[in-house]
Length: 125
Image 1 (cartoon, rainbow, N blue to C red):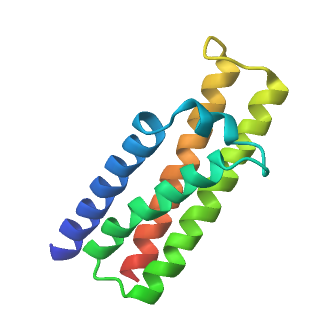
Image 2 (image 1 turned 135 degrees about the vertical axis):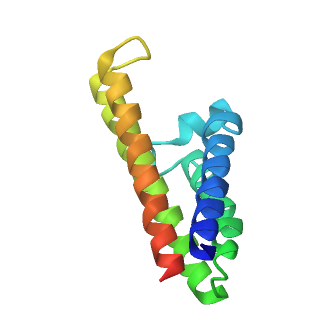
């Protein structure tokens, strides 16, 4: 039962972090910075996600070395997922009125959620 409570607490923390970082705390300069290795926006965004992952990992009693590795993994994966989506979106010229946009958005969100599942498993292992 304790493992289930820990898992749910971690998932809830990651979901709240994701909502805030992806939908509330993204000004235009961050959005424009994704998909371009030379702009800082994508790095700041991925960094916010990585830092926001720390409290979720602490619910599992994860040690500092493992937290650092998992946060680094979150940063890299989040950046690359967003980078790929930005490149694909530009090539497809999809906007919020197209099916392609929503398919890409859904795939992006699915990849982030699968990352969170992997983070939870790694923290609890």
